[in-house]
Image: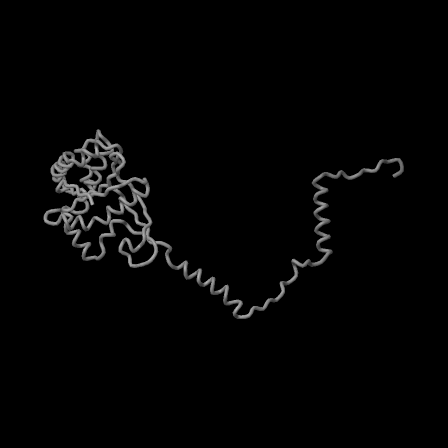
Length: 254
C-alpha cells in the first residue's frame, strides 16, 4: 500500500549457503550426464594378454600357501628320531618334573640372596605334585651345588643372568631339517655369567649320568652351542657353552 514500507526477508549465511547448493545441484542435473557417468568402453583382451596377470596372481596365491619360516623349540634339535628321544628320556632319573623343581629353585637362589630355600623347595614339590619326602634329597642337592666350583664362579662373576628367553633365525639344515630356508629357533637359557670379556652359558641337566655321561654330552652339545651362538650375536663377545649335570655336580664345557 502507498505510504507503507516494504518488508525484505532477512537472509542469513546459512540460507545463502543452502540456496547456493540448490543452484549447483540444479545446474548439474540440467547439464545432463558427464563422461564420468557414461558406460565404460568395452575392452577385448586376447587370451595370452589375460593369462599373464592370472598366472602372476596364481603364483602369489601358491607362495602364500607355504610358510615363509618355521618355528622350532631348541630342545628338539637333538631329538632327530623318536627312538633317540625315548632313549634320552629313559635317563632322566626322577623325571622332567624333578628337573623343573631344580631349575626353578636354582633360579630363585640366584635372584634372591635372602630366599628361604627350605620353604621355597617345599612349595615347589607341592606345585609339581611330588612326594614331600623328597625334600631332604632336594636340600642335599642344593648343598652339593652350592659347594661346587661353578656356583662359586657364578656368585663372584662380573655379571649374571638367569632364565633368559631367546629366538634365533638359523638355516633349517643346521638344525637337522632337510629343507632349504630358515627356521626360528627359540628357547630359554638357564644361566649366563661374565668373567672379564668372556661369557659362559650354562644349561642345567638333571639326567642320571651313571655310565652315560659322554653320550649325554654328545646329545645335548648342539643345543648349548646354539645358546652360545645366540649370545655372541647379541653381545658381540666370546661365549663358551657348558652343561652342568646336577646329579654328579659336574660341569662340561663344549
